[in-house]
Length: 118
Image 1 (cartoon, rainbow, N blue to C red):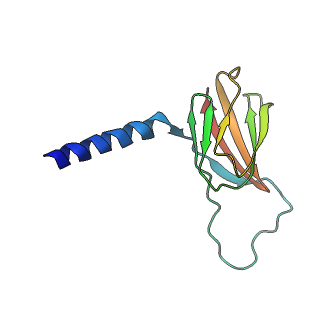
Image 2: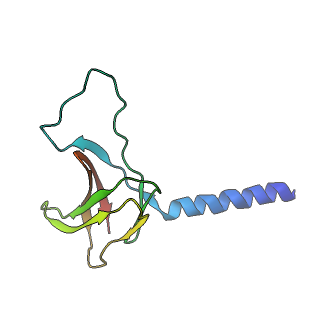
Image 3: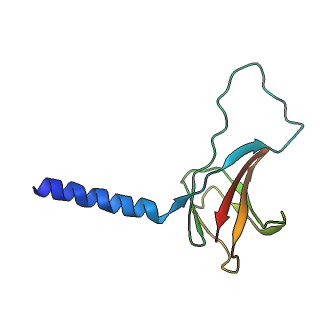
């Protein structure tokens, strides 16, 4: 009985910790028309980064590459921009931002785009 109660408690704690942070779904695109398309060898598509958001805090998975982070308003104007170095796992956005925004992560010629609500 104790094992069942312990497993139930562990599952409950894991589910509450997962739901506290929301994952940002990203689309992947190429932002450079001069990039050569393929070299004759099949490759897997680029995988979007895993980024979680809670309030004004973005959490990146450890060992990620360096990104340029842009937050754009509905008019497409950049309202916040910073570099997310590979050593950072958390970035705090300015609390003056409020509403829906486009979040862009740039890595070389790769562009990852998603939506966030603050």
